[in-house]
Length: 421
Image 1 (spheres, rainbow, N blue to C red):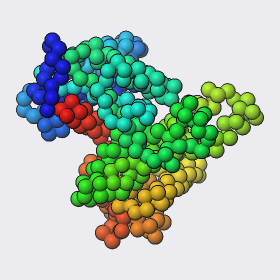
Image 2 (tube, helix red, strand yellow; image 1 turned 90 degrees about the vertical axis):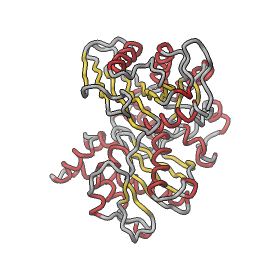
Image 3 (spheres, rainbow, N blue to C red; image 1 turned 135 degrees about the vertical axis):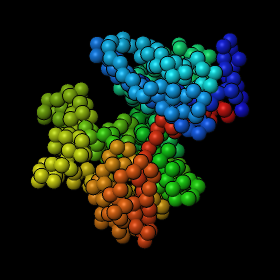
Image 4 (tube, rainbow, N blue to C red; image 1 turned 30 degrees about the vertical axis):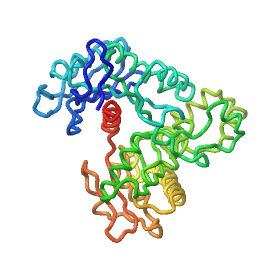
């Protein structure tokens, strides 16, 4: 293992085993502090509505490893104005200090940042330098809602601990192994290259974690396993993973492409945008809002909560039923397509909020695919647990699994491995 540069006040990495994970949004900061000796969580929290009078910080110290971590008295909440991300992180630091987990602790090895878009340049976790920040800024046009907030969180954390390694873990990194045949769109190559137009994919940290955990569940090395991962939350994406590497994914240049999502349309004929502009007189911004915020499940039936949609279906609501059927139809198409891409599939795995909790979605997505070796056991599918598990019957040729995702743990693992390389 190596140490950080020996600047004044710097802590040798060899003496440290904690990682702070930051996920900075435009008006929020999610955070977790982990002890990498056993991957336990020492604290978790959220600052939301940054910049408003009604800002809110929720902090939960958790049971640590006996060295003082997690010595708080349970969840704490505070409300009131938090002006900006700098104030938010200082408030987080204060809460951690109350639990003897402060940012000045010699046990803190690094801060890991979720960064949504890394383009083609960043295919692995990266120690953040001025040059790295400049490149992340260059990618703002293809991630205008996410990268600016990520940059703000990074700069703020750097100001608080300039001596500490700051590491970027990119949502797009896992998908950089896609072959050009999967990553390129069939448009003029010079135009595409000039404007960085290609399939980048997102949710990569989740797909990486879940595909590896699925291999573990099957008792195999990731290099031996072909997996179709279905990350189903309000945002949703699928990936085809061959031997631990992504070979295709459903999201593209932006997170709009692919599966039907809570408020996003997913796949759509691109000429729809021309039609709306020419015939409906909608502006580019209006079309953007329509496809990203007023489409998907909410556009089809007015709800993007799968629990509410299922309740309405049970009451005979035909519009909710149609929304569910469209959602499932798209899922089946991607399962079939990625089965063809992989050639051999060892497991289809569901993860994220809907994937982990909505048994009817899992059952409907697999129903009728018996000829592909896929089946779901109704009793196993109905079990509610936080553990990774198989929900396919023993006779099924292809495993069907539910594997809870843990993006924060994956970011912490990648960050810790990098600074201790």
